[in-house]
Length: 325
Image (cartoon, rainbow, N blue to C red; front, side, top):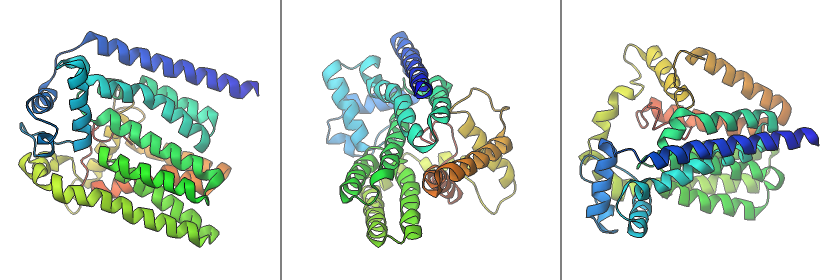
């Protein structure tokens, strides 16, 4: 109807504004900052094979993303524009992916709000112009959620399962946080199959879950364990972990939620961590009432799995590392 068309037009305007903001910042060509320079030096000095070895200057990133960056500078030259091109493309695609996934999960009015927040989010625009994988992490997360949402009408179709399964493996190789999003999606799909007692779908959910865990664990063991140790990542990020069992946990939970809010807003005082969690809970309940358990679980699952990862000291609560959420 006309209402749906209006929402689509407004979403397209928001997506276009987000793209313009990203391109405007990209064209300013700000100088590389410390971490960007470290990544750039590794990319410029090494071959494709050399990028699979632990990086210098305390840098740490997925090897396929480093290869993408290497390809960009091989084609475009060793400068800021080439180095930031992959992030720019991901940042421009992100609001559209959020709109496409959101309209299937929560309806067009709420999807429009999410799209506007994504297109105008200060941190999202900033990291869409940085030689780091954070913007790609967010775009991959939105793509996976879109694929899961599109399965609603054909959730028992084995081809749909193969599609999200294979793309999920590729996503895990390209983006570390993808395994958290897929963990939440896998829980939602398995729960849906269990409630419906559709055992083939449950077997597919469990089977692909095992494949996704293996796709994450094998490279971590073979490639990244030594690299993370050399970069001293666990020590560097320890203050941003939950540290369960020590004093001040409630304050760290509040700080972690505020870091999530900061991915969309440049302030921490509004809406505040407690109000944000309350609004999220109310929103999830409304989605559950209107659309059933499946879309609600698809929204709750990734947040829950990410919270577990933070609680067991596997993911620091920092806005750039939570951009995908």
